[in-house]
Image 1: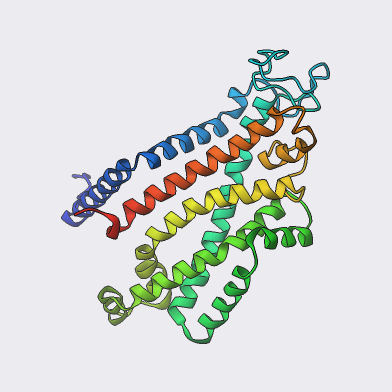
Image 2: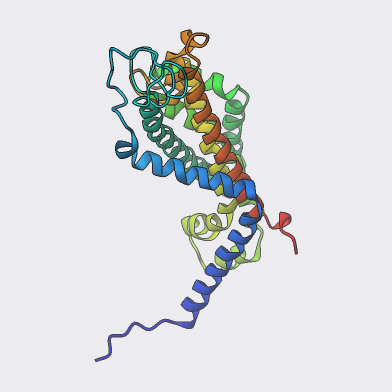
Length: 304
């Protein structure tokens, strides 16, 4: 008996179409050299976070009592044992920065996941059902957007209590309206198209229309928004950590590192400069990558 799986022509055609779309996307993305550079840095940060235990020369919380505020190795008084110097209690700055990548990426993933899932769900409901449901959801989103994002996150964390978990919840709530508005606009635009009408006539149910028919055709701008929101989440978490409302010491989160170093700005520049540069480079890289994805996915920006 022949057990060889049969590949239908439709499956082969769909696979070929998907491959061509991916190839086209990469060709447009590759033209943006800033986006490619951002992607390379993002990949490097991900690998650094994944192999932090192997790459970091010291434990991020181990204190070396004889090396308080040791300058970087290339500066007078520095030691190659601590390449980027030490902080006020003798902890290795390089190791804390490397382990801090884990927290930053973890924050970005959790915040974007929560805000993306909840935002898409509310946006689908608002755009599909319209009427009073749409009005209610969008007015709540307008209220959230009427407050400065960092101030609202700060208020929410103050209510929930200072911690990394509460900071992530607060940032997710602040970012959620952007996904709701974007999803709603896409759903309204797509609902009038022929393929949606055909699905309705064929007897597709409400959930199938929302999540199988409409949602896949609304994902391109949402993916771009998620990439850009990733950098916003890292930046807001660092700001909350700097204000003492996010991750708490001795957690090696970049914003917390800046908060611990405030009083040493004039006497030990390295304890402030390196965490600040880590935040700057990571956020800039995600923004550049997001811009490149937007240009590659937006047909209006593609050259004929």
